[in-house]
Length: 139
Image 1 (cartoon, one colour):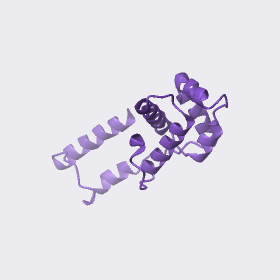
Image 2 (cartoon, one colour; image 1 turned 30 degrees about the vertical axis):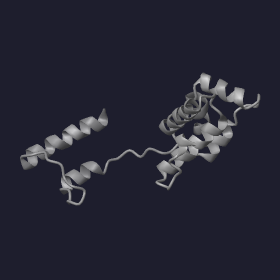
Image 3 (cartoon, helix red, strand yellow; image 1 turned 180 degrees about the vertical axis):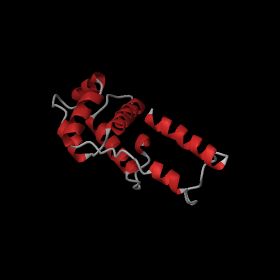
Image 4 (cartoon, one colour; image 1 turned 180 degrees about the horizontal axis):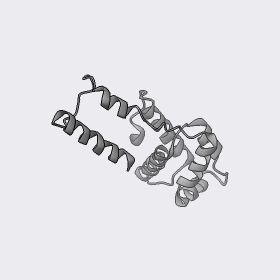
């Protein structure tokens, strides 16, 4: 909500100040009045290991957990490994779960811990803009 209010305020300001509210290119310098408005940004920090551990436990649906436990030969899921090895936030964790379920669906099998680890590796590479094995869903 605050972002949309800011955008409306900024566009209103530009309209009254310059007679129009067109957008600037990133290479064009912004007027000082606008750059002052843009300097008030709220930093969002990445979750730490404890928060990631909580997120993994909360965001992986119980049917996926049950599927992993079936294929993991009764061993529990090492949530700490996922939380410590992969520095992912909530939305990325959700994407990993969806990718793991999709991989299992393509194979016609249960979700495995390896599906989840492969999805985490792929998502981390995407976030870090690294070259990744894009054939994740074709193996």
